[in-house]
Image 1: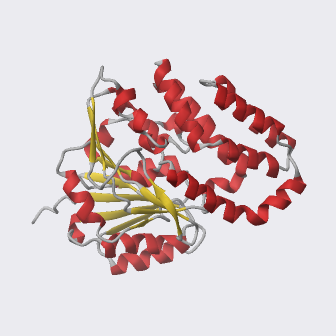
Image 2 (image 1 turned 135 degrees about the horizontal axis):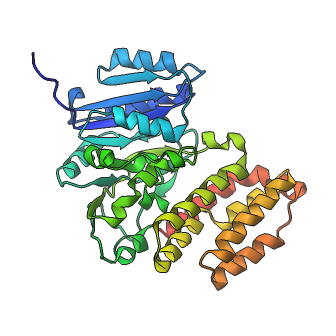
Length: 355
């Protein structure tokens, strides 16, 4: 009996109630492959007990595409636990952690497969940010100053200047694996690193699992091609409210930075990156739109942490003062809300000019 050949690549997709999105996601992967045969890659979908039509949608996809494996749990494990579980189910030499509502550009395999032959440990793929209807907002590079489309290799060795070689070029925390769909990892590397159950529920357990790579000999390859379309406006973590969603990022990354990065210079750069991902205007809008006193108190605490306590500067202190002087106002919120989509697009255009 012939032994089944190991796939080159596994897409590991955790999902919960994404029935109206996941078919498009899967089709862009399957129909977008131009050089890989279906036997050379697989899509492993772990359903955390969805209550919508995800089950029917994926079973229909599995009838159309033979390289789909679908596992449905009785209960939702949460994104961190489910990501860990579905990645362990992957059989490929490389694992692409992928969201159930993002899309891939056609010909994605022609771009990523040649990189896999370079022997990298982790591969980072940047995205085009889109609204919920997948109308593009802007390109979102993971590193600054990356002209052209040639891949960029980062060779990290113990004792090297990680700050100069890697973090100083980071445009966002995606350089530290914060955006799940951007991460393709060697399966042996992933499995050699222990899962982090103490981070389950934080939204960042996959990042923490990979964090030790920054302190060992590691090759990270940046694709420098925008293959992913990232759907925004569909954040399941907003179910507990906007302020709670902000706190996931601030609390989670404050804990990660404090736990893994001892050097003050590294912490300073990382908090600077965190402030770019969580700009003061985000906190100001959250304050204006907050409906509860406890939400405003939580925002005050987070802004104080990021802009006064963690690597403060004259700029961060001015931002903090600007935030404090802005009132929490239902009237101001009502004035701003109708223009919010336009303001968001303007912000993306401005940001794209500085990346």
